[in-house]
Length: 551
Image (cartoon, rainbow, N blue to C red; front, side, top):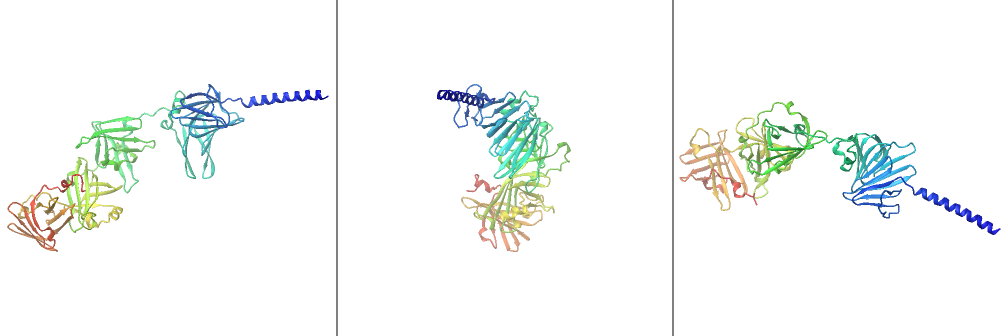
C-alpha cells in the first residue's frame, strides 16, 4: 500500500515539474531583440546586471539599454515595430502581456510601426513629462533635460502631458512636432509645423528613402533680402539687407549703409558676408540667420557694431519701401562741440570711422567729473540719419542734430532714463554749440585773435580757444579734459585797440594781448588760474597726450 502511494506521489511530482518547466519556458520567450549595435552599447537585466551582447539578443521586461557617444542601437519589438536609439541615450523596457512601455530617460528613440496595433495591444513611449500612445506611425521622441520633443512623419499620436498637476491630451499629426518644457513645477507645451532642421541626424538616415521624408530646404540670397525691424527697446530700429546695382550684398541701418560686402555665401538658412575695413584693412565676417518665422538674426563681428546683434522681424520687401529722405552730410558733424555756458561744460568729440559712421565721445566737466573734474559719459559709434547723427547708448537712442533756429547750434537729445542715470544738468547736454575751427569769410580786426592757444604744464597742455559763432558773439573756452576739465563763457561785447582785446560779460572784463611771436597773454578778471601766456597752436589735439586713453 505504501509502495503504491509512493509511486502515485512520484507521478504527480513529475507532472508538476513538467508543467512548471513549460510555464517557465513560455515566460522566457520574447519577440523583442537587439538586432544591431554601432559603437559602445550596454544592456542590463531586470536585476541591474550587465548582459553579454550576442546576435539578436532577446530583450525582456525590466531590461535597460544605454548608448555612449557616437553609438547607436537598433531594436526589433516584433516584425512590424522597429526602434533605434540615438547616441548618449538611456531607455528602459516594460512589458505586461500585450502592453508595452518604452521609457526614454535621456536621449532619443526613433520608432517606425508599419502595421497598426490590434485593439488589445498598446505601445507607449514615456518621458518625465509626456506619454505618447503609438498605434501605427513613424517618428521619434527625445528627452533632453527638462525638454521633450515628439516629432511625427506619418499618422498621428495622442500624447498625455502633465501640466501644472493636470493631465492634458495633445494630438500630434503628421509633419508636426510637440515641444514640452518643464521649469520647476511649471510645464508648458506647443505643437508646430515640422521642418527638416527639426529632425535629428540619427533619424534622418533612417527615413531618407521613405516617401514621407522631408526634403532639406534650399535658400538663395533673394530669400534673405528685405526690410526688418526691432522694437523691443526704447525705440524702434529698422535695417535692410539688400543687393546694390553691382550685385554686392549690403547691410543698412537707418539711411546709411553700415557695410557693403566684397563677397557673401549662402549655407542653408545662413548667409555670411565678408568685408575689409576701409581704414585698418582688417577683415570681418558678418552672419545673418533667416529664422523659421521669417525674422532675421544679425551677428556683426566688429565690436563697434555689436549693439546691432539682435533679431529683427520681417517688415516688407525692399521694392515696397518708401522713398528715403536725403542723408545728412556726415562731415557737418565732424569736430568738437561744447556747451560753454557754465562751469559744468559738456563736450562732444566726433571723428570719422568710415564714410557711413563716426566715433562719438561725450565728456562732462565741473561738478559731474569723477577724476580731475572730468568724466567720459560715453564713447560709442554714431550713424547718420535724415536729421543728424544717432548713437546707441545702453540700448537707448541718443540723437545729435542741428538746432531748429538755424543759428549754428546743435542739440543733444537724451532719453529721460539716461538723464537720470548720468545725473547731468540739462544745460550740459541739451544744447551743444559747435566750436568754429575757421574764421568767417569776411575778415575783421577780431579775426587776428581767434584760434587755439596752449600753455605748457610739462606733462600736459592747457588750451585756450577764442571763437566767434554765427550769433556774432565772442566765446572763450579753456582747460583740458584730463586735467581739471573745461570752462567757458560768451561775451556780450568786446573792443579792440591795436593788439589788445577787451571782452566783457556778467563776470567782468577780460583782456587778451597778442604778442609779436603769435602768442597771446590772457588776463581773466574772475578766473586768475587761467591767466598767462598761451602759444598759438591751432592743430592741438589733447587726445594725442594719451593715445592709449587717460590712465
